Length: 140
Image (tube, rainbow, N blue to C red):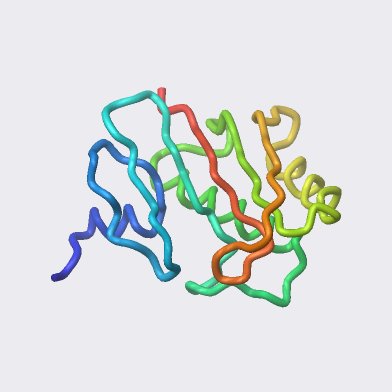
């Protein structure tokens, strides 16, 4: 079954949409959901540091953070939003000793108006990534 352009757009951006349907999937195994109901918030989940569908495993956590933030920016642009609209970010990090370098990249990306943030230490991420982001952005 061929996916519509809208479905392909949702898969590539991993942005929330109105509905109760579970997303068909991505190149990585995982259950990525969609927003239910209507809201003035946009949920962007599972922003990995992918390039051409793969995670560049030789990159440092800071370099992967730059790519994940770039992918987040692209997903926001597809929804008519920017990093300025982000209210909350959750950073999943496989090595908490990389906190300072990842934090520096985060501060550079968001500037003076830093959104609320949580950093969660995890043992492993999809595709061998060192970093993954989830974000909540304002729609209004």
